Amino acid sequence: MNIAILPGDGIGPEIVAEAVRVLEVLDLPYDSESALVGGAAYAAHGHPLPEATLKLAQSADAVLFGAVGDWKYDTLERSLRPEQAILGLRRHLQLFANFRPAICHPQLTHASSLKPELVAGLDILIVRELTGDIYFGQPRGRRVSPDGAFAGQPEAFDTMRYSRPEIERIAHVAFQAARKRNKRVTSVDKANVLETFQFWRDVVTEVHAQYPDVALDHLYVDNAAMQLVKAPKAFDVIVTGNMFGDILSDEAAMLTGSIGMLPSASLNAENRGLYEPSHGSAPDIAGKNIANPLATILSLAMMLRFSLNQPEAALRIEAAVTKVLESGLRTADIWSEGTQRVGTREMGSAVVAAVEAA
Ligand code: NAD
Figure (tube, rainbow, N blue to C red):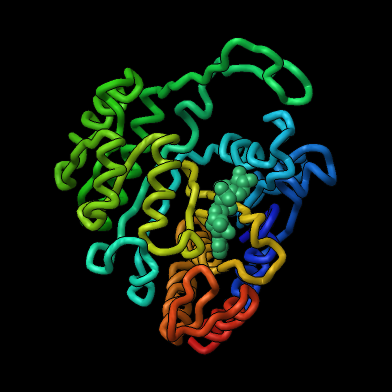
């Protein structure tokens, strides 16, 4: 098992370090190598995704990724911004399917901004298409001056597009995932306004014919955003495009109380993948030992399950996280009266101890 470790920026190095400590105590045979990515790579090598980092990721069975981005890079031209590293990795590794589970741990029900009865037992899966849509459409509005300003340019534009094979393969992924869960898929689109998403709806419906055991319904994205806060438990698997998935998965994340709890996996057709927490680099809390490392540790569990074929190790990690939450330890983002506030490092140590004890 070859694992590429790309900690990135902000809280990335702190939270990835805790996940690596958990990996180390699992006693699995693996090789790993770390590399710079994002703003850290731009600062050292002038590019957010240097050739060496890309090669390392391409040769690995799986990539453990922290997060990239910092406000200090906001004025850079778009192609050099830290966030381009993640888009580049998705494109080069052909990571077309993003899995973002939104699970409300029973111990954290109160941390949600919704009433406990709306979120208790919540377990939904958002399957987001990652390589098409408006984020990759051509042509794109161009910045014309080197300092990144629009310099009097009269307009800018981005183009939304999806091809039939792109929609078909993500629809298959969603229906297959639903078969292992509650056998319901909700496809989210904007078919009433956008041609691209009328096409999406038609193709998803065609693919559904191969999955008669799975129920399919369609929702417009504005309605889906409302239903997610009104009755989130009504969903099982949500499949949607790149942009709507970006937004809805963050909304679903907040239903669970903290974005610091939610892992994600981005997979290609061979199940090789990139695993990262759902949140960003949180520059506001970087270097303070207060970030929650659990989303990254749970991303490691997803890596062991999906790309490295170690389902028992994945279960061991997930059980350890549950045990630690049951013991009352909380980082600041999930802390509440009566629980014990701990830092990033202490939370990592507690999970390591629970894994070792299992
Ligand atoms: P963010 O997710 O970094 O932070 C949003 C809020 O959540 C902040 O208040 C932050 O302190 C908090 N938070 C995030 N992760 C946390 C954790 N593990 N523990 C406790 N609190 C946590 O989103 P943002 O502030 O919009 O973006 C910051 C930077 O991250 C930007 O440069 C953005 O482009 C980048 N970003 C990167 C990724 C990625 O690397 N995949 C994803 C999203 C945003």
